[in-house]
Length: 172
Image 1 (cartoon, rainbow, N blue to C red):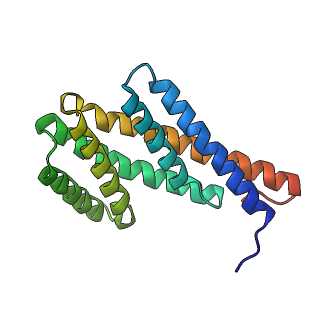
Image 2 (image 1 turned 135 degrees about the vertical axis):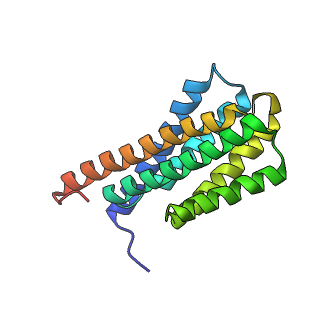
């Protein structure tokens, strides 16, 4: 088992702060625009995006942020198109996930198939909870993801810069 280092503690504290910031930013921004359940979902989704992109190094966080954004954009396009034409249905969700899988495979982004599928499933199921405003869900989840990515990558970069500067090592 690897020894718990000072960076591990700083990493955990910084991720905690980043998740809190993501949640606060998106829930405050959407508080007056959407109903309370959408507000809570937005906070959760921004936190998930923050956790997803918060990695061990600046380069890995930036790369994960790009991957998350790419997968979310594919899901966004598929889900919005679907919801503008059809109401939520389990079969439709399965078809959208299948199309996302094919698109990501054709784009040679197989590692992002899971993220695209999970994002599509969440967006479409949540859209099924409010059929009259279903088309809004892909847009809201894209915004939540953008906030989570920005905060996660930003906090990782700032945290690693401060930590490594304080101990006199090059920033990773």
